[in-house]
Image 1 (spheres, one colour):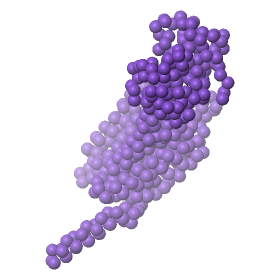
Image 2 (image 1 turned 135 degrees about the vertical axis):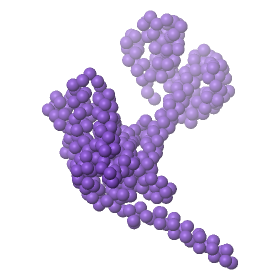
Image 3 (image 1 turned 90 degrees about the vertical axis):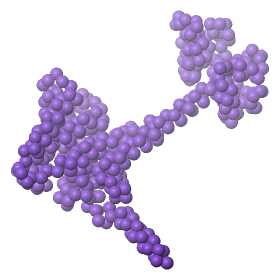
Image 4 (image 1 turned 180 degrees about the vertical axis):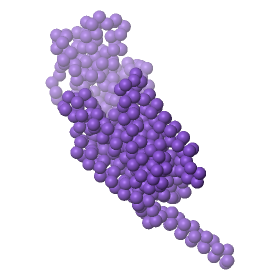
Length: 434
């Protein structure tokens, strides 16, 4: 009896602990959760322009290069959040300007300039940390990896200042920013100052990264800047839609990461990044146009379509020669028997033939489609012969090109409506649409 009471008490304690973990992010850490979600959304929003302009390394550079600004502000202004923010922001802007100056006035490319400037700035920051007065404590680990649970009300205020500015910039300058991303030359031609737009974007980016330092740190800030935007880029071709999706993915990654961190008892910043990476992996797999599974399904459908047309053409040739339909597998060798059977089943479902092996029979609609394929094949062979392509390549090339039979009539007009192919086989005439 006593053992049962102990077990029940232990189960109740475990349940209370689990409930505390489940509810703690929403009750005890509402401020930190709200700050992380806002940072994730803003970083995702601005990250779209970074990804589209292939400037991921600049985001990385700015995030690391703010270190000397933070340390100098720490020395001069102690731990005042406003001072640290100002120092880091100035360092970020100096970095962006220095990268542009090095790129313009030297022979090195932008990626090399980024490596030179941000490593130099980061090195300066490390040296300044080593020279801090005795007793001064600068948490480099927090700077690099963040500590969302240490977020204070002043951090939330800075994010609440940056977030509306970012949204306002994107809304008011949407078209110039869009032109700058896709065609900077056209943007200049239309009278937009691309340099000003670039530095405005870099300033806002630096401010956002600085606001994210406490929550996710400089290393995680780069991931939250790039990964949600890359995920959105995988999912859509429209910029405005990409911006919305990236902001949503960034916010969800931050919120879900904070929640999971409590359940797993792991650091929140890295979990946020892993959640964003999981979203990106899902986008790679399931994106409606570019996803791996979507592409595989589309290629499978194309292969099936080609196999169906090959079967129709082979049946038309067999009818033309008066051969038996049972000879279809031999006519399509070395195509596997199972692929032929699957094609016959699909064609029967589409009403293009009746029956299956060994006696498939074309319907009227199927025969028309088969003759269209045969016509396209022989027109392409005729075209290749007239282009002086080696005879041994006619058949294989025509086999590949015939599936673009929608251009067969243009090809026939170009060839002068030939009646036979180079081997003397009749080219079926164009049939009226049934």
